[in-house]
Length: 452
Image (cartoon, rainbow, N blue to C red; front, side, top):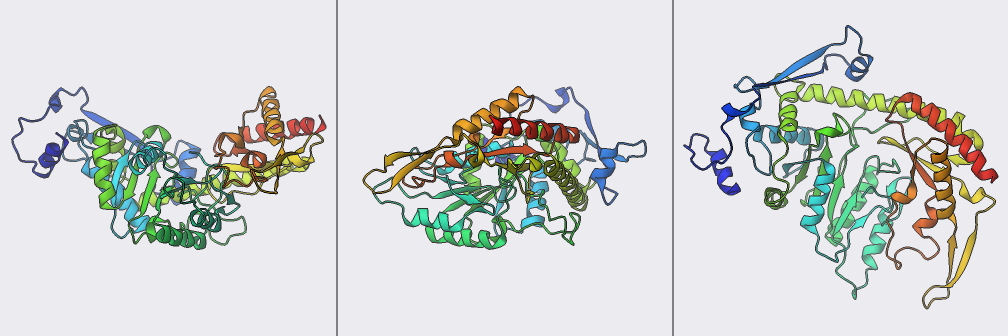
């Protein structure tokens, strides 16, 4: 049925007795009006946020006639997995402008979580091993610069032939890695792509924070002028990258609309999978994106101005957070943090080794080797700290919920991720008054925790 529907779309003048959707004249909606921010100014986010009587906005209208980009009668009917052509074309324009992929096709998704799920189900069989950052939203060692190419190469080179097949998928968040906030440098991206070529890896590039890349306070370039870092997709000459993009951080998460950019072969399989599972993306999200990027909306130039202005706003919030952190938590000496390179989160290291109850315990020898196995009580101490924060009215994310345990042979016996989970993730994306209140509570809780 879906294949027939695609044929109908290619020949719009056919007389159809095949469709099963209601006639558009029976939809109880004649017009949808979006009142959106104006992007006429250099810093539209600041103007929109100020919400003064002089703040400008513009109306985008989706109706049943041809004056709009994506008419209601088209978008509210049954669709197919790739989404409406007009919405597809809109996000394809974005992808081509920011990444210039050599030969790739866009598929609409219900946001990045949906896209990740579809990639994993498409690429994996039961028992397969995928590679991912050891601290990951969805194990693999990372440092302050993100995924470590040498660790990736080591795992693939030393993979034992007696086990299941060697990993063939690498999942990574290259910009604003969640939760650490790290950015992969261009040099690391090139080395990782080279390793992927050598070991025939498919790279699932999950990049919801791509537009929230920051510079240092001393940088001469501003958020309005600094270029965005080159993506894995932009260097994908082999068609081995499946890139996930989302509107959740730059428009609104409730839109539940994103897009997957892949080679044409993957695209065809994704469409078949979508058509037999979640079906086509929701109509109102497609309608909004088609109109806002269309001739009566922001268009590409306005969208670029909006995301750069959004980046400037989040960098201002990041810098405010770090100033408050230095004055409150930093002054205790019990924790430290560095400004994140991208994203919405600060990765706070708790100096748990300074606690009077911190312990390292030798549990005997590892398997048949001579090496002693050392464990710590970091998990117990961090759980206690989390509960103290809760008792004092603060919710903050502990590292343990992001930690992916590696297989024993690839997780060093004396370097378990559980023993390195002495971190907390805090956001600077919320209300600014919450930063002051929350970090003040955290400083007081840390003082009490380390005194106990």
